[in-house]
Image (cartoon, rainbow over all chains, first blue to last red; front, side, top):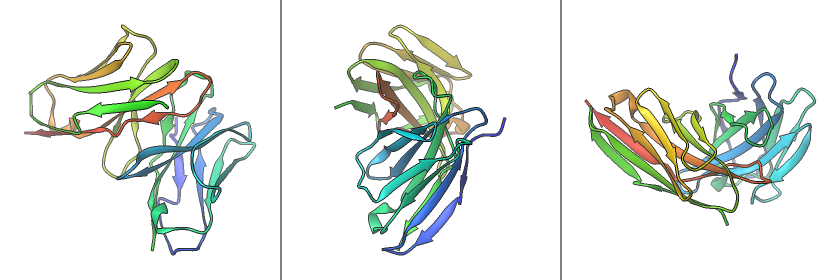
Length: 113
Length: 110
């Protein structure tokens, strides 16, 4: 079974630009969560989607947004990029039952210059 | 607020030298505790899920245990390929997110 895939794997942007990251979950998984990982803050939850609806949102500014499509694929968008947005963005998928394990993709490394 | 604390921050082991990693948590209504392994530049790789105090799970040289306040990841006779950052995360009732600890970076020397 193919794992979680994320594109692109690496991205370089400049301050003020916007970026869209994509995530394809494991086949059959209906929940997709996004996390930001930085050396200083570790892994922090951004948001979670199920059936095209955002069910949970972390403590991030409104510049961070996401969506989920009918095939469970998900995208996240960051507008007006700041230097501090440089991070590894991780997507995780699960079957969406409340005790289900989340499986992570390889991540997208974003560098903001 | 949910808190997850991992110790030590870093652990250097000789090949074959067994040790334990600690994950202590302060949450209301634990639904599950998860252990992941992360190699540099890669996404976390799932290891174990523990749901209730007293539960234990094993995989090769790794064994995870859970009490009401903490979890331990025991590494028995580690090999250099066990070198990685080990992350602990909790999920609470009525919530879908994982709250992660800062991780323990394990280095195993041959």
